[in-house]
Amino acid sequence: MEPTREMSALFHLIDDPDTEVYSTVSERIVSFGKDIIPNLENLWENTVEEDVQERIEMLIHRLHFQDLQQEFTHWSLRDFPELLEGALLVSKYKFPDIHISPINGEIEKLRRNIWLELNSYLTPLEQINVVNKVLFSHNKYKGVEISYQNQEEFLLNKVVETKRGNAIANGILYQAVCQMLDVPVKAINIPRQFILAYFDNSSDYFNTNPKPNKILFYLDPVSGQVYTQKDVENYFKRISVTSSPSYFKPMSNRKIIQFLLNEYSKCFDDDKNRYKQNEVLSLSEILIEQK
Image 1 (cartoon, rainbow, N blue to C red):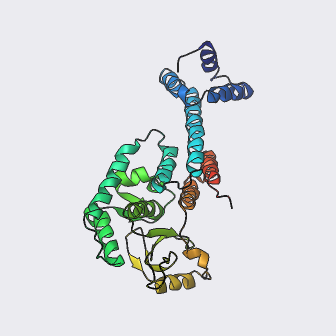
Image 2: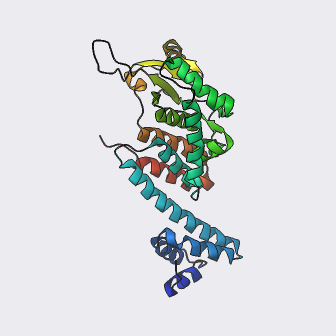
């Protein structure tokens, strides 16, 4: 953005010790939008005082976050928001300047390598064996248990880069790749877990309507391990939760990304980062589906 007198005056007041003055100045700077970020970055490079640099960093963060809120709003308002795009929007909270094309390129390689081994004669379990082989054996993707001390394991760009993610991030990648291949794998709302299910999309012989809610088996996105209905029933007994039909319905893409944001926010559960937790939760609130 071309510097102006007003901008120069505002930048001069960033170090003002009066909190009311700084509040007014910061609000005005943020009102310029993200186009002012290069100017702020240049100011940061030419500033030696650490406390002033911290104020500039916070202003840049606010501008990125303001832009991200708008992106989440636009994504959520679509009729069919894409899962991968939503997951990468979550990544932009920590990495606002990520390049999407290389990530999509790596995911496309996964899709192509799986597609080359699929055919219409494979059973559902054989299809999943192919997906697991390409993901976990050939490409060495590794799933780990959820840890709120390792925030990058929630972020799809880092999962693709490091081939290491928790159940949620791995599950999103797994489901997204399956969607590209018309393999009917979707996340379901099992309590305290992020589990995928293979849905029967076949039709009855005398009834051409598909059976969208019939689950053939379940998948752990950490390892690709297959679970039966009996395994899931035993899990409910173990955690003393009564099974409900709502637990076995596919989660929408909005619900999946909302769940990712809610879990990711727990990475910032301390006084220093409380504002980040509140920001991430506010992104989650944007995605609340209207009934």
